Image 1 (cartoon, rainbow, N blue to C red):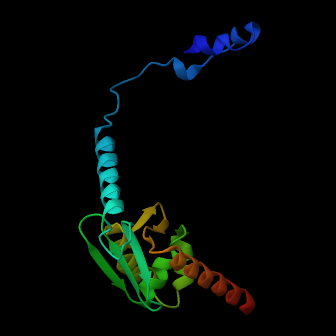
Image 2: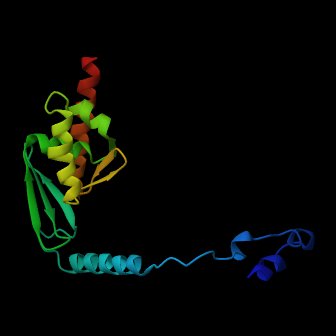
Image 3: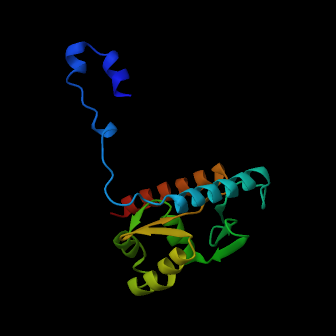
Length: 170
C-alpha cells in the first residue's frame, strides 16, 4: 500500500515518506472483539425490527418519552416493552438531563426540591440502573428522546423560556 502513495508523489517527497500506521508489531494477545461484534449485531437487529414494525404509537424509536406537562412517560422497547411514568420532580430532572449535566449542576438546579443524597439515591442511580440514563464520572445524560420532532421543539422552547425567566430574576 505504501508503494501506491509513493508513486503518486514527487520522488524526493516519496523517499522521505513514512507511514507509521502501516508498520507495527502487535504486543501480547490481540483483543477479542467477539462481544463487540455480537452487541452490534443485536443492536442492528433491534433497530431493524423497530423500523419495520413499530411496536407502539407508530413510533420507530426504541426509547422515547411523551411529556404530559406535570408527568413524563418513558417507553422502552429495547427488551420487550416497558413504560415508566415520572411525577413532577423526576420528570423535571430527566428533561433537564437531556443535555449532559454534571452532578453539581443537577444538585444546584434542584436543591430547593430534593437533597443531594435523595437526588442521587432515589432519582439518578435508579435511572442509571434501569439504563434510562447514562453516567460517566459525575456527568449524567437522559437516554430517551422525544417521541416526535414537535415534542422536542416544545421542550426546547420551554427550556429557553425558563432561561429567560431566570435571567430576568437576576
